[in-house]
Length: 547
Image (cartoon, rainbow, N blue to C red; front, side, top):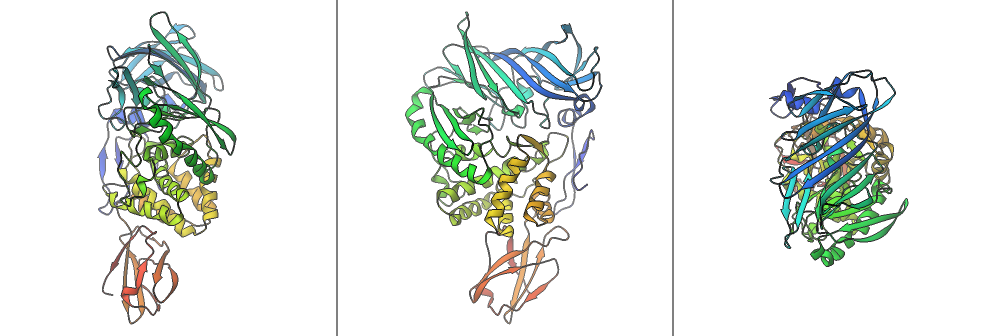
């Protein structure tokens, strides 16, 4: 296989780069977290029933999760994850306390009763403690504790990459999602908690707290499960979408209500654009929400976290350096795009996070195109190339909970834009994007799954293109020279066998499609060197050399 899952190995090979291959050491804890080991692979999580009491006065939480699972294979040892410094008080099955031991951030449990293939069982995990504090959310995740400008408690969770087990016990691996989930959060009055899915009940307790019970009717990434508690106001709307009426619910802090009504008007055109290009919003039964948070944003499924201060751009900045990015709210667009790319279609290993981030980045280009025209969309994504660092390959290390380079955003988005140019048929390209969301709806995929789908539906083999942009730190170099009206050209700085076609402009005639390889080719174009230019929609580096 081109990319093989590495199991419990403590050493992983970084995908090939310009300098060769690099060996990186990972810990036993990394393997426990990232590997679908025998203690995990024998059971399939089907329902999480999560109950958590949040105490902002001392930054602690306590609660329990009843995990319902389906037995895939007979096994007596189970792994459940809960990160330090949180403490497990007890685990129970069939009314009996279970024996367990901690191994790093995992607990290994001995199950005395038979685990019979095909049956459904449940285990209760009771716990408490002071969870890790999010120092710089959302990138440094955990619990965020604070107060708003009126002195009200303001609480949120962020844990992508770090893992949901930073605050609640679960099977913390992206390849297994529950079919549905309850999220019951108890918080002090008068603040309100907004989590994923739909609010089923609000229960006033006798101790100046309230329990908000939310229910997610669909599969959900565990890192998307969120607590958002604050002094919220609420307003609602409806979007007439492809699958009917989609409920829109907005939860700004009370003193930002007018700002939210103005800024969140961008949601409907965004949804219309993305439904056109990617297919129906994936969570009609759970609705669409934007929830104001102290951190910048996160793609919490059906409850997108919003902290862009009600400004266009990325905190008022244009990431494309073209001016186009100031015409719309980056967080609304990018984080909502993840409802399709990352939440609907989910990578089974964090090494393939480009499936989430490259497509979400590319979605910004698509939204700009919907707002204005195709040329502006292209100008936006081309403008983001200055942020590509080529520090490491986009694909990370498998089976150790390791993401690749941050280039999965800008470089990955430009790779997809390049693939669109090669296909050169927007009807077919849109069918590919919509087809991915239909074929793998609410599903777990690998990078190979996505690549094979694009290859098959486009009728073009992009394996070398994917290998070049995802597995190396090199941008293809188009070397050329013009002598006596004859163009000489070839690829350099590429993976072996790289043969991506590319379009070129000539002042003397129509555009030409070139098919370079690593060997020099010639074309009698009859143009001077200064009249030859590559189409900048292809993410390559043109370099004139002496032939």
